[in-house]
Length: 373
Ligand code: GN1
Ligand code: MG
View 1 (cartoon, rainbow, N blue to C red):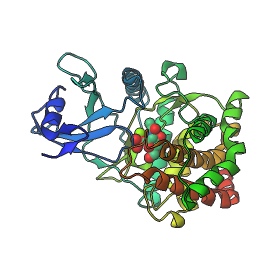
View 2 (tube, helix red, strand yellow):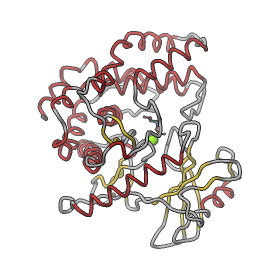
View 3 (cartoon, rainbow, N blue to C red):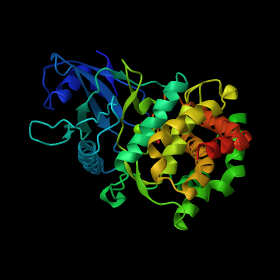
């Protein structure tokens, strides 16, 4: 029998059966490409509910998973109320996942080995993509993030708990990188040398968003934290975005982290797992489409200061993710799941090449942002 990180499929069926659903669990399979948690698609024998999602939370990353569940609840209740009071544009549909409870009424189940499991609905009739398919898809990905920010724009950010301290605080990642470098001597290679130098040359700019936050030019709001392309669900029938999933990192932050993350993910047509890092480039046409989609629902709450930091956010979050992957490689792959020893190094190089491409097109990207204001 095949095994998934210490679990046989039989075990997984047993885990899935801890959660109350409308049918009998008939199959469990691995699902998606998450870098942190383990995700499974559960198939039921019920016509009304064919599937649900089962996840094992990585508690090395999310030290207090019960807080993640509390945030999900706060988020869902807020959005449900908002959608009741402010209907969407005619023809648009928006779905939010709901949490499944165990027989005992809990929103998670801890197995005998101490793993933290939770389950939630699967949005039938929709799918997500690893990379952007075309300009329309790009617009929908941007729309999804704008919709998300819009729905949360009246939720005071202090209602959400900080489930992952330091997340997207670039100077903190730099600090951690320095610490790791002091402890572990990296194995020399042209790729490692490139990474070391790349980071060195960009240290000075790492504070740009945090400084703006401290000076009150950017304000804390509820954010998604991980709005990459494959977290946006697209309706199979209409091609429209109908949800943005993966709510683990919903917490207080800067919308710039989200916008930067969405663009570094969406405007890299080769995808973040490509092996051809020399070919990686940032596509300004997709950038324009994503921002257009975003602003079609988010324009009202962006200030002049917000616009003025957008370009820096795009550059910074690509750099930051490269730095996070690179550090994890140096540290021995302790955070991101890796399929082979150098996996996180390869991922880092992709983000560094993307950052270079963003930097070399700074004027064009800034012009796109100006044109959309
Ligand atoms: C991680 O696990 P996943 O794929 O949802 C990471 C994000 C990164 C992303 C890069 C909690 O997300 O910040 O942008 O990998 N999530 C966390 O693919 O660190
Ligand atoms: Mg995620």
